[in-house]
Length: 265
Ligand SMILES: [Fe+2]
Ligand SMILES: [Fe+2]
Image (cartoon, rainbow, N blue to C red):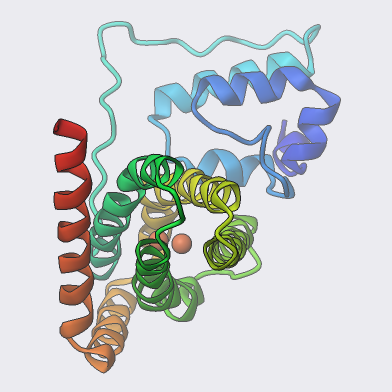
C-alpha cells in the first residue's frame, strides 16, 4: 500500500476508475481535476478526514486496486457518530474567509444581473463594468494578491493544490476580460457566458479554499508564522486603506437593493 500512497492520483484513477468513484463518494473531487499530479497520500492528508472515515476510505481504495488481496476491513464503531469537523481558522486566514463573504454576495447576484442583461435592449455597460471593477479591485487586487503574495508563500508553492489555485485566478481573469469585451461590443451572449462561467469557477474556488486549502495551510503554520502573516496582511490592508473595502461593500449593498427588490416585485 505504501507504493500506492506515493503514486499520482490521476494515474491511479486512470488505471483503476473505481478509485475515482470512491474518492468522489467521500467528497474528494480528484477525477475532474485538470492537473492530477498530487500523490494519493497528500490527497487523503489534505482533506483531514475523521480517522474512522479515513481508515474505511483507505480500505476501499486498496480493495479497488487489489480486489483479490485479503485485506482486513477496519472495525467501524457504529455507536460513534462521525462529527462533521468544525473548521477554525487563524486570525489572518479568518480575515481572508471573511473577504470571501463579500465576493460570494456578488456571485449570488450574477444570475439576476444576467437575466436583467438579457431582458434589456442593450447591455448596461455601467452595470457590467461596475461588477468588473469590484472583481478586479476587491476580489483580485485586494484579496487574491494577499493569497498569492503572502499566504501561498508559507507553503510549498509547487504543491499541486496551489498550482490549481493560481490557475483558477488566471482563468477568472480571462472570463472577466471576455465579459468586458462583451460589454464594449454590446454582445449579450458574451457577457452572460463569461459572468456565469466566472460565478461557477469562483464558487468552487472559494469552497476549496474555505474547506480544504486554508485549513491545510493553517495546520502547517507555527504560532510565529501566524503572527508574521497577520502583520503582513495588516500591512497590505493598511496600504490600500479602509476606504476600499467600505466602498465595495457599499457597491454590493446597492446592487442587492436593486436586484433583490426586482426579484421580490
Ligand atoms: Fe484564491
Ligand atoms: Fe480566496
